Image (cartoon, rainbow, N blue to C red; front, side, top):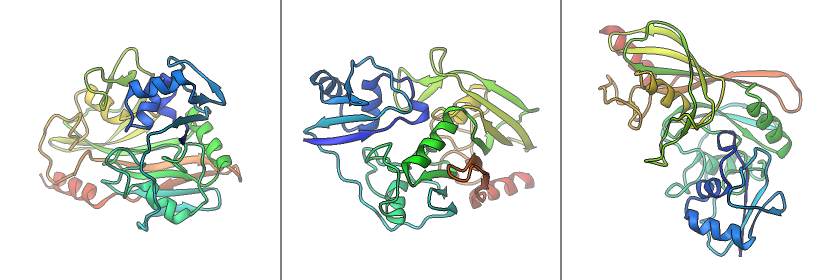
Length: 303
């Protein structure tokens, strides 16, 4: 029988345990997970629970089952490292790279790359599928991401995420012209019609995005977004909700043609600032803006 250790990321807090495990071990159906819960082969912090249990950030979830998910192996994939010490690694994630393994993506993920780079020095709190991962950004979003090399660092960064004290700024090119700065305070939850999509949902979790206009173009606007919360697809859902979806977004977009091939949403996790887990000093790091992003802006300026 195989054991899987799972941890809970910020944007999955308060989800039902059966929903969460189905997300974390997506090769397994929800009905199969419910049977495992009923059999007592799923424990949270060493105790059996009901399928309606709501997961918490510090929960340690162990799933025992006969079904096997492929092993996750280290891969020698180059990393764009913004900062590194014995506790943390901050990387500039490229476009098109999945952060952690999932069905159809057990290879060539950021996790495969950091497993090779860090060897055995990765936190285990989020389990074998997500070693070192404390937060994530979408596959086609570029930019800064923190990797934790030990459990102490993971607990520190996770606590800062939970308190919303980590500074996270994104650059985005959105469709249409926005007149001025603003704040979007709308709850976000999973779509009932498509579980892979998120949407503004009154029964969802509170989500707050601050946006600032940097420059207007004829058909687009360059903005800076500061996250007060960290929900899945937050900026993409919020900007689409006010009629200005992120350019190139194939999920939440409006189909407006872009001057360059964005290969997904024009969204970049530009800056991240946090308190170091050991030194307690504030660290602020910026990830270089990708070439396609700069080219997009230059072409807009010529119009």
